[in-house]
Length: 163
Image (cartoon, rainbow, N blue to C red; front, side, top):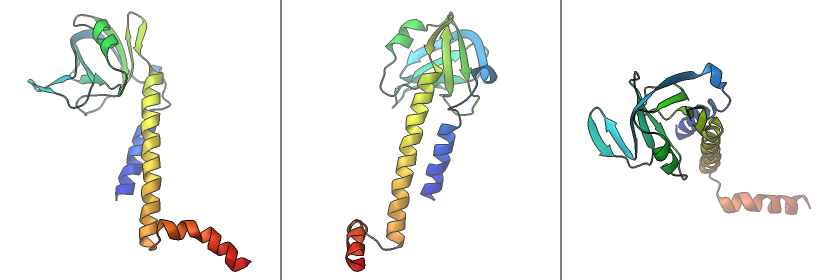
């Protein structure tokens, strides 16, 4: 069951790796809220356990968030303020917050590029694929009652028997 979940996660992470931005959802709107590491969910403010840069846009019900695992958000915090007009390319989702932001632009300047979105998702998909392979090998080893020593010794013992 876990392998099915990992496979599904791998597929979901790779589906957005090759999209055409001109065919994705886009929105040009005024920023109503912009903040890092706090999250306003249904009027309740709480501190997020994960670093995101959150923002909301006029005319949209969605709360958007940009996830840069290790890079920080100081540039976005300086560049995006309430009242600014931005353009985003994104995928509509029911997830709160919506982290499927492909690209973020302000005054024609790209603040968050599609390439960085691709890079984050590709590395996440690669990690899930690697984990899935390891779990599959371990599950097969358990099922066939094999252990690491038996598997590593098999080529050596197989050559002795044929020689």
